[in-house]
Length: 281
Ligand code: AMP
Ligand code: MN
Ligand code: MN
Ligand code: MN
Image (cartoon, rainbow, N blue to C red; front, side):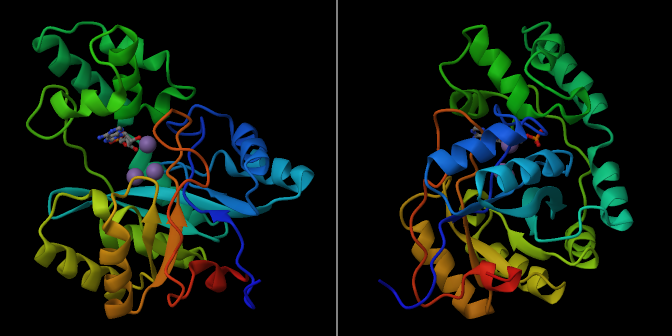
């Protein structure tokens, strides 16, 4: 037994409150069944699932941490910032999330037009059938529809040919700025975390510039271990965490599909302070 308490937390999880396949309560039940000690629900730009998940966590006896994953545009790259442990009723945070969400439906209409011009008609209607909340319509719902109609075998393949910069179906969007996202999270008493840093297609120099800016704005943690990371990413971002003095976070980025499951990610290196120390665990 290790002397320090090492909870099995999954701190990056989606539900039907954004683009996940499980209801907020369903995610919590699955977390318990998978033997996790606790989780944070981190839906895209939304805290709408937190109350249901928290209630279910109480019943199931698992720790629940408020979470959100905010879509940010930084130097024309889309970057995600996870917030953990904030007051989910804070007006400034809620207003910021609403402003970030607004426009998803209009963007989806333009995605539909772009895909129609590329020869695939009716994708908005199809994608909306996969979205529990129309206002939260995302590229993931379009990808599921394109899989449903047999254009591709899985969502990952869709994103290789459609929906990404330079490809049909991609429509740029004005997301939050880095300063706004970190500010809203901190104002609401939470911890700002860089989500899945291994996913961004930016140079190592740009990554260092980004992490410096994030830290200067009050960002405190980075997902060293992510279900969407490749082997090698853990070592690389553990090093960055040490250089910048960040706490380390971990999460599966579970959406309910076959790509990753709750709790499925590599362990954090033991020398790094885990982010749950900032959250009272
Ligand atoms: P949006 O917030 O509308 O820009 O949609 C982004 C979502 O699409 C992400 O949160 C993922 O769920 C999904 N996504 C993006 N890129 C990929 C990919 N390469 N493979 C599978 N899903 C992806
Ligand atoms: Mn998603
Ligand atoms: Mn993300
Ligand atoms: Mn995510």
